[in-house]
Image (cartoon, rainbow, N blue to C red; front, side, top):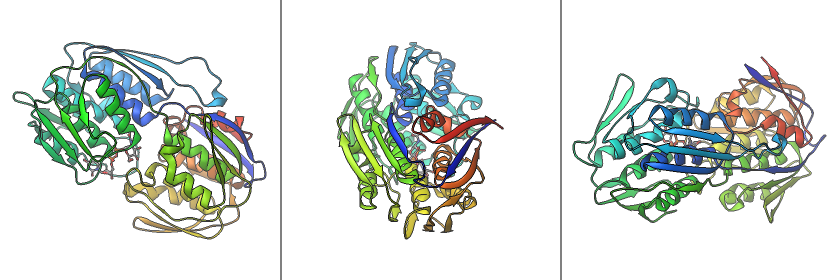
Length: 433
Ligand code: UD1
């Protein structure tokens, strides 16, 4: 086991300074890898982050019969840019069973369900584990596949879907614009017979990226970027080369890093259009934000003012940045109300933040955070990727030593997080235990 050790004299005492490079989005790359299953032949996904989840998804695809090669150029880890290529050779005949020992290591592996049903007319995918941030049901995935003509059941911990003949286009309505359900149903519908309509679909930039790759493969999709996707099924798709969209959550994390610790960070490769609301809020709170030729820049020289946050599907405030907003509120001037609408258990993070001296109170999916001038270092636990990274940044706004244990969660979403922070001037090191 590893942990991160952060030593700080408090916010803005040792301001962060420098440039970070943001690579491809984890949440896109993993789905693009699953989408490769839809076409026999060799697909290449470019701009893929150098993180464990990509390796696990590669192992899963190999288990399904593919040959997967992941290459990462030798780059300076302190720059954060460790994107590489994944080459996936997909056979005509795929195996259709995704076993628990791989799926439990990566919730995103549920994204193979749609492609397997479409290609093999049957799939058995273990119910995933993943981050400890909520129950994360699959009811919408299963209801949509049923609409497309599959018989779906859960047995022995596996989701089993079978199609008697072939998938048939249908109209599907999601109760909530679920990212995972939109992706699975889209990937099933592209090879269904006839027209499908997916209403109340998620429209995150990662969904747009998946749609683009599917269209490059020969899929026919209308309404990309909107909440109604119309899909005209085709008989066969072709393999492609596709570059992953940049990671807006990693880019947003660096914006919060400057805001929480103080300093100036240039975020190269970050797309400010995917972070409109977040950067607006930081600007209103007193940070200086500017777009640059390669991305954007955030400068925070003074203590910022508190702001309220309500998490919502895109283009609302992203739930994945909520822990950072809470960490920032804990050292801002004034009081913030934070409302979490997407993942019910995300406030486990609040208890860890309180250990660092944050003054907060949670009630259901609301949290009230009263800013204090400075936190105080303590040992804390990373329960998931974003909470872990937010605790590291909170440590930079604390006085003394903060140890974030179970830091392997952070490595699942951020290539070289400790090294990049050290490159920006923070005293952050990895240590055993
Ligand atoms: C993806 C992202 C995650 C992000 C989330 C919301 C990946 C690998 N993960 O997760 O980082 O926080 O989108 O932007 O891309 N739900 C159901 N039934 C379903 C499907 C979802 O109840 O059939 C619920 C979930 O429990 C959750 C909410 O809907 O409370 C949102 O889930 P969803 O949008 O599907 O998120 P993920 O795809 O799991």
